[in-house]
Image (cartoon, rainbow, N blue to C red; front, side):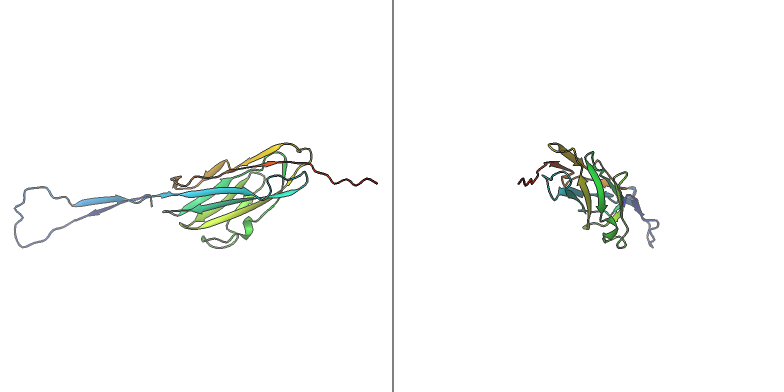
Length: 175
């Protein structure tokens, strides 16, 4: 993909004389497409957590093709008010060589996916704790970058933002 392929007729052999004085068209070229249609989405398992609750964001990337996506990464740093707990990047197994090919760096928020074949999908789950002192706040988490070697045609609309509204419910028993 991304290359131009040229096909040229280099010789015409015949027993007769070619009396045609018209210039022949002996070359044709094609440019191989190098675009993908990545569908990126994010969900959260609890949009109304309380302080101290653990929430799970799920980021899903699907390559709707036609080209293979290479050197693919997403940036999704957790916003203020959330503390990173864990992720499942090391356990992902998708069509680029098996489990462990991708990684998530919680300090930078970069999820390095690598190669994602046309038609393939991969998901990352990030667990985070809702910090104390955030009650009543709305915390917005957005995927801020999608990088790859190809062009993302963006035919499929991406859903890159999730919001949570933090509560602070208590269960007091007074006797």
